[in-house]
Length: 304
Image 1 (tube, rainbow, N blue to C red):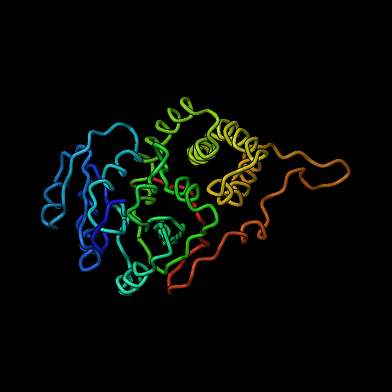
Image 2 (cartoon, rainbow, N blue to C red; image 1 turned 120 degrees about the vertical axis):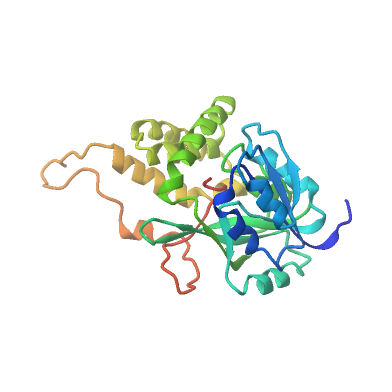
């Protein structure tokens, strides 16, 4: 195994990302030992901004696969740890450097969970728990062309491991309404291609269902949720089991949303009821940091 210097490499891929890039890169000052910046075809000021922040810049020919682009970036990294950050994310909080510095000293942990705090137009913050900090180890790589994640490789090689959670937060602008439609259309296109190539992929079917229902295509979404549900009857790997609770909740909500309300015989109540507060509260709560947040969830891939 290649011997690497102690330290932290931030790996970021981007295309025409000038809107938030300066803020994102500024937040990494004093935290990252290097920033590996992979550009996939920018025509705006993205590369100039990256140069101004002393990033190590590489070009990658976009091939409709986020995992391949990120894995290319990891191959360029020179330090022992990788922090994956997107160009519309900002490392949030004054304690991040100290928390990360201590975490990197633990020689027995291959990866950590941190929080992605998704900003909404309403002011609400929706946190997701994401596997974004991990060792620069050839066994840990991203999979999936979209909603890419390291969980499949991580739990294949460390099957009994569950990542510790760090109180480190990434402020994420990508869910604001001015950005979400373009991302949703792009993701649906990539998810359709993925499903055509791997129709039996449980995560691919689940993510396709989520994107379709978010786009208002409820009947189509149920087709893919039902396909994903079918695969839960077979023995599952750890990276699949991790998202079983949130899958059940989303599938339940999709059924409620798409199904017609029919009156139960002999009652004045509908045959299908709305999701209970108990079901919604099953998600793992995020740690309080003095901000308005809903409950966090461990997602086996980013909602890009």
